[in-house]
Length: 169
Image 1 (cartoon, one colour):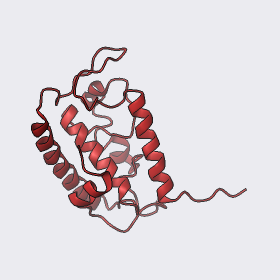
Image 2 (cartoon, one colour):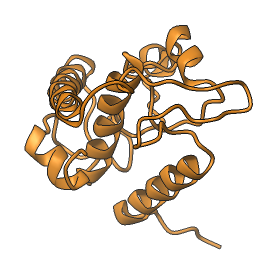
Image 3 (tube, helix red, strand yellow):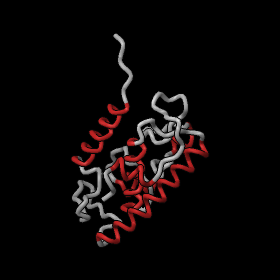
Image 4 (cartoon, rainbow, N blue to C red):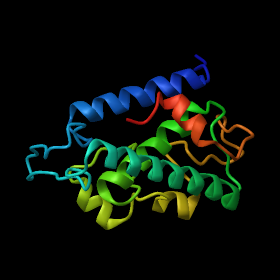
């Protein structure tokens, strides 16, 4: 039996399911910006005491920084974005959110028991160790040209990121 090649819309659906499951398991910081109760103690985000305007400004700055970083890294490593631009857009947004909440671009595609500990450890901070060592990006942000989902582009704009993510609030 031949298994069909996944389409880009299937990939986006899978990513959205992963994000939804992670949110249900408290893998993400609460949008209410109050400490969440975890079995290992509370997780307090770096943006917990920010006003809505301060957080929006921090997110805008982080989104610009992570988009610029991603564009530069793609070019430096001769990798490409996914042919479906919503995939890198969602990942870049997640990196920007972690930059604001944790102070570092922790990979948004994984579940962590303790995000702050993982951020300090650095293994999964973008670019993660598997990407730096073997050019393996499980988030599908940085794809080698032999990857079936690699597009031809090495640039994404902040406007594209916002468009594919429905903003960033």
